[in-house]
Length: 121
Image 1 (tube, rainbow, N blue to C red):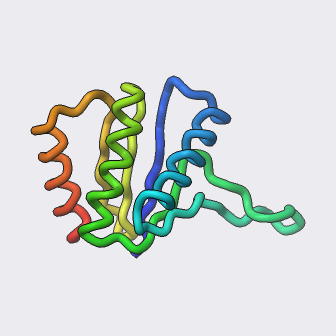
Image 2 (cartoon, helix red, strand yellow):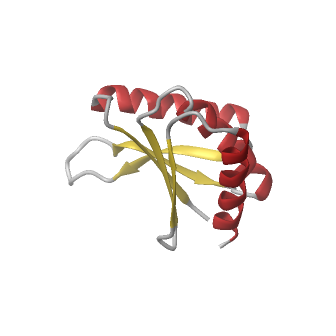
């Protein structure tokens, strides 16, 4: 099942947001068993290559174990930037949102349980 992770941050330029997206992409591939790819869309006929979609990563191989790893990576980034927002959307259109800021242990546990339920669906 493909899942799209969208990164939104009102305080970053498009260039800085894409740099952050590449960093999260690299971290996900290095620290989890997820397959993370930068989202792309086909250009118009005659264009060279596919264009990337700013702030989006496509995830595959999601399991209950990789959900925990995914949330640990997301947690480390949102704790660094209060204006960062991560939207996760399943192929069926259902979505899950995590908003930046310091998460208490209780908030993180609640988010983790909600994410596990979300990915079961």
